[in-house]
Image 1 (cartoon, one colour):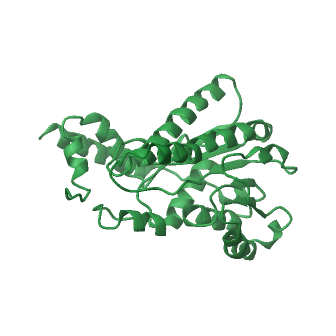
Image 2 (cartoon, rainbow, N blue to C red; image 1 turned 90 degrees about the horizontal axis):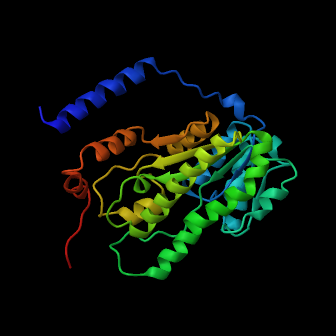
Length: 285
């Protein structure tokens, strides 16, 4: 058996044993009354997270650049799921790169869920440095600013910081040069920050969420005809993120098998690039 076959076999055995003995530590009741600030909530995974949190009885503040959509669609649906959150549920039209209003939330904060992102160009690198700089500002620096502003409040509540990232922040992929750079930056910063918080005995958990291709409208439109992959459902991705934050795990992989993909990427450096590129469709101009 070739080395890659042995690795796959061993991985399958380990995964099977874990599935057999694993018990779900997530208790939905733990989110009843939890104070949540969720960014990027007007569509996609953020919208689905808002609905889940509302069903669980959390008190949520939603932010997005599209305030009208947030108020008309997402917030009204959340209030249908859990009307009792009305006094604390609101939409915010603040810029995603500031976030200093977090320190002024009068009702405290248990979860800061960073999910927003800038418009992503799914294409070969075309040399647009200004776009990359802008995307880094939205996808990375704004996350740092928001997390920094929220840390004192989260420390008081022994709360959780949840950062939505991507497989492209673990494995570099074609068509995602600028986007991948922002996600690698998130991994580096927040993984390092987690170490520092533990060393300082500051009781704030950091959960980094590594997602694959999700069937949001934007993702499907960007990747259509370019990748040979099946998209996973956004509601399930949103629930996986919430579960991970609630159980204070360090990393969430959705779908779950992405973790094994990351292991194989590290363990099989010789032919991994050729294997990866087969999942992408590119014809030279």
